[in-house]
Amino acid sequence: MSENSSTQRVRLNKLIADSGLASRRHADKMIEEGQITVNGKRVYELGVRVDPSEDKILVNGKPLRKPLAQKLYLLLNKPTGVLTTMEDPEGRPTVADYLAGVPGRVFPVGRLDWDSEGMLLLTNDGDFANKVMHPKAEVTKTYLVKLDGQPQPHHIEKLRKGVSIVGGKVSARHLEKIKKSGDKKSEKYEWYKMVITEGKNRQIRQMFAKVGFDVLKLQRVAIGRLRMGALRIGELVFINDVAAERVFLADDPEALKVKKESYKGRAPSLKKTAQPASRVRLKKTGTKASRAHKEANTVKK
Image (cartoon, rainbow, N blue to C red):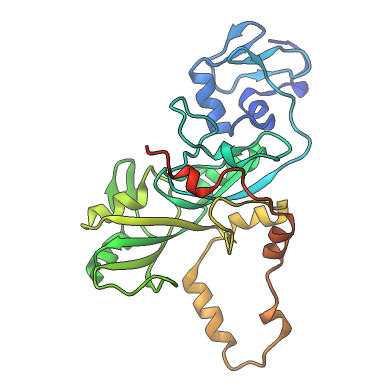
């Protein structure tokens, strides 16, 4: 590697993330697996620094793209039966199938299970993705959950206090029973809104399994205070950096309820009925995905 001034050298994982190839966390995994060579030598050391102008960096034998000047932020309403990855050796549908027309390479921020649907962020901004996924950020994720059964108050309290699953102890920051529009009332099924900050593999399904219930349907509807709104399944939209930063504002339904109560009895205002600015921007800049939801669901896991 080049011995030039340290001001010209950057961390290898950051350079990979800035190229739009992967997040920093995924870049570290690629380095550990020996997928990266620098000047012909395979690199396994995390934290290594390189000089982008002098060092020859290859990823699986292909030159690393130069960092992208334009930062892209996108929001996809991921259908079920689609993998949160850019490619799959088994040929199953991936989120890459929905990115036709995107002017640059982007990658998913975090993951959403194969059998779950809803809001998924994609970007080429490695720093942003790393910040969203870092545990210290405690970014809230809000889900709508359909259960096979009717939990009792002691079940809900247990999930709020925390349960141990594969990966550690987790808890629901917020959990409440809701009425889902368009879903007929049933004595067998119930819907809940759940807010979590962790991101363990199949976390919500594991949590409800611990108290004896199966999850029939799982939909993510918000990350922080960035909400999916009326985005259709399989639809993709661009958002700007201001909207993207809303993911770092915690979604707190209890605080929202208190705020709404405080507005009761006040004179109506134009601001109260105005459409949120972020949603207007999404509609103006939105583009439809390249593959229909029906086609994606014809391929079984």
